[in-house]
Image (cartoon, rainbow, N blue to C red; front, side, top):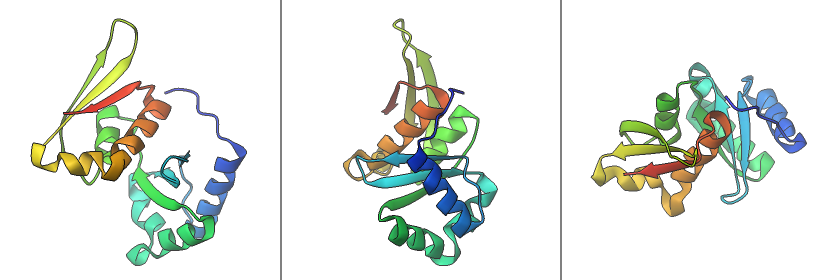
Length: 144
C-alpha cells in the first residue's frame, strides 16, 4: 500500500465525520471534480456511518456543503474494485503491468449494466480510480 499523506482539510473532514457518526474512517478523499468527499470505512461500519434512512449522510452533506459518499474499504484489490464501483455488479477483475511499469486494472461488468459502473459523467469510475490510485498504486482503470 502506498504511503498516504492526509491534508489538514482531509483531517478536519475525518474529525467531523467521526464526531457525527461515531465511526473512525480509514481514509477521506476530497474530489474537487465532482464536489464530493469520499470516506472509506470498515465494511461493518457502513450502515452506522450512513445512519437510519441516510440521516447522518444528509446532515454531513448540509454541514460540509459537499456530496458525501461512503465506501466500504478492503485491503484486497479485487474486493476494493467491487466496493468502489457499487452498485454495479463486477464480473471479473484483471490486473496487468505494462512494460512501462503502469499498473492497469481491467474490470468486466454486464454490458447492460455498464452505465451503472461508469456513472453519470463518469462519476463512479472516477471514484474507483481515485481510491485505487491512492491505496493500490493503480495507474489506470478500464471498464469493459
